Structure formats: structure tokens, C-alpha cells
Image (cartoon, rainbow, N blue to C red; front, side, top):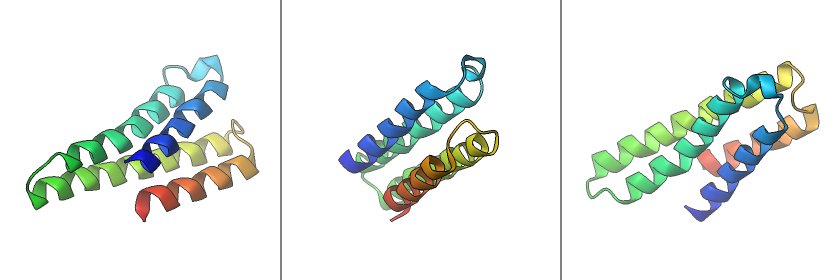
Length: 98
């Protein structure tokens, strides 16, 4: 949980550099997706039954892919540097999917 929390916090901080025009678009979507990753992992941890845990872990993984998509889009429209984007996507994949 701790590793995921700090990884997701990094992406919340990344959104501070997005243009103000994206406050209700990309910024909001990235923040919600990042928050959803660790929130669903925490909720899964509190569940007693395997199928419940599995469902929340699956939702968390979906949120990680959503965040990854937003990062790639942000790179495409030049909100993020290519190097920063590649670093961010690798860190997200490593921490969320392994």
C-alpha cells in the first residue's frame, strides 16, 4: 500500500504543471484515476473474501491503465516532456502491475 500511495502521489503532483484550461479535463481525470488506484487497493485489503479482493484489485489495475492513457495523451499534446513521460509510464507499470 505504501509504495502505491507514494507512486500515485507523484502523479497528483504532476498535474500541478498542467495548463489551467485543463483543470476540469485532463487534470481532474488524472487525479481521480491516481486516487482510485490506491483507494481500491486499500479497500481490497479490507475485504475478507477472495472474490471481493480480486474485484477491487482489478478495478485498481483498470485505473492504472486509465492514468497511463492520460499520461500518454498529455505527452502527445506536449504537456509533458518525452523523457518525463517515459519515466512516468515505466514507474507506473512497474509499481501497479507487478
